[in-house]
Amino acid sequence: MDAKILKGMLLGLATGDALGVPVEFESRLTLREEPVENMRAFGSWNQPAGTWSDDTSLTIAAMESIARLGKLDYQDIMENFLRWYERDEFTATGERFDIGNTTRAAIVRFSRKLLPPNKCGATEETSNGNGSLMRILPATLYLYGTRGKIGGDELKIIHEFSALTHGHIISCMACGIYSLIAAQILNGKNISGAFTLGIDDAKNFYGTNDAFKNFSRLCDENFAALPEDKISSSGYVVDTLEAALWCLLNTADYKTLALKAVNLGGDTDTTATVAGGLTGIFYGAESIPAEWLATLKRRDYLEKICDDFASVC
Image 1 (cartoon, rainbow, N blue to C red):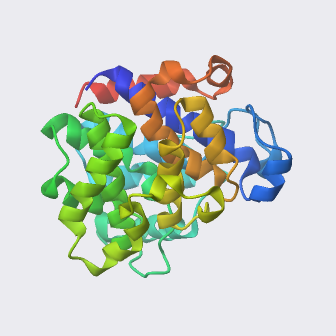
Image 2 (cartoon, rainbow, N blue to C red; image 1 turned 135 degrees about the vertical axis):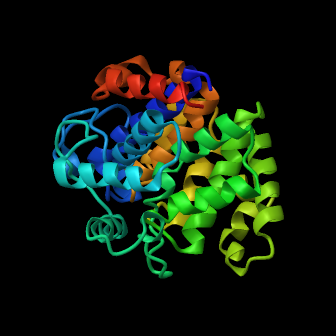
């Protein structure tokens, strides 16, 4: 796979993440009164401008493992997640400052050798945060790059990759739907076409599963026309997927998308991460404002990981 595509993905993802970090948990009303317009410092996590969070850290932890081994190895990926959790590796500033409860519990289970790596993710319906969706793209792009498609066999692997931390079918489906749309972008479709074809593929694969009803709004032909007040930007994985895709369908460039995603409020960094990864694939890293990239922490490190990853897919 062309390293340019990977850099668009990772820099788009990390930039969205960094834009959202200072205002995570802020309400939509607060951000309407004082919207994010550029990179900010401090705020919710008291971090320097351009600092990305666990969303990007876990993404690059997975990418590093795949690039080094030339394959998906769940044991090794979870070892990387553990290094991030215990040693602050794969971080923007040498400090881990954010982690979801479900992700933490899965990594602790792994560290105690209680379960196989791809069984460490919680399977309760209450454990459907967005912690696997935000880091799924390395698996998606590796599978697409080595197999040329995302189909049934690949979706089963996507589900296993989700289940490292989030094993409930709703989380697995969210990752699958997102991956199917990403595959259509990689196939050369425009945003609207990729969304429509990706959702059609999801209907074909998941349509007989009762859990797919949780994604019924994405199947509505008027989804993109929903008003903003009908879009939730909470940490629930279905909300995050809907919010990210709604932003994608209602913008025409990276900057507009990233700011729209962040200014929805709530789980700002992850909404912008999930939206930014797909947008970066489509528009490329060159679409990201230069001043944002100049502020982004460890940009050279992120680009090096992309170069290494490109060599195996």
